[in-house]
Length: 249
Ligand SMILES: C[S@@+](CC[C@H](N)C(=O)[O-])C[C@H]1O[C@@H](n2cnc3c(N)ncnc32)[C@H](O)[C@@H]1O
Image 1 (cartoon, rainbow, N blue to C red):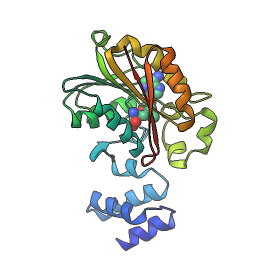
Image 2: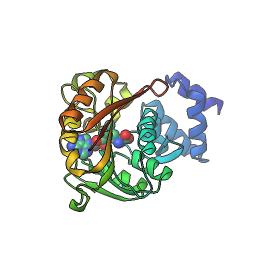
Image 3: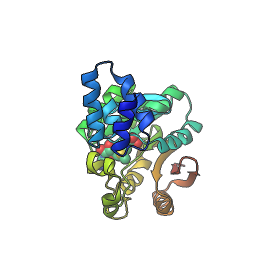
């Protein structure tokens, strides 16, 4: 244990003890352990090395090249759970690994669908999501029968302003795909497209939830309002998270 801790600490891992415990629990084979530690020391995200990320107490399978679900996004799921009725129709759009929908479905029994444009994300989501996973651009691959029937739309779209991608930590910048991060000039390009199309898919009184930065929340609210949705913002200092909710009439 102490060798692994020292190796990780020397490589700059801030939580060397915790990471060492997780890597040691991942295998009893010393050759395999050495390979896992070497990957981590080379800068791969811990979640890729382990093959999973923790999200709302669940182990979500993640594969290299797929966005690692962030703990702060648990706040978005908590907001959605508050207004999700049993058997609601839920769509996890831009699902990545499918962590959001999977976590919501673990809390409330729902009819769950997920979709992502990235084939690697879709493959990964199919390992996690207790529902159908579709591949394609935003709403395009969803079955038409869901139009006007979606009660809860989870959409953690990419929202990093393009110029800020260079300032992200290397684990994100070098290992996560640009399609998972890049939200265009102000970070809100994909969110705008979701806002425009969401009213056609939401049931009466249905909700859409997106995560934004603090600074983007006002523009995101205005975007939802312009699309005919009632917008509200939720913030959590503990999670360092901002969520914008849009509700259809
Ligand atoms: C910030 S990641 C969020 C992933 C997941 N929802 C989560 O929170 O862990 C954004 C995801 O949006 C997907 N994406 C980006 N543009 C898309 C588009 N036009 N249509 C569908 N998915 C898209 C990316 O492939 C990526 O998986």
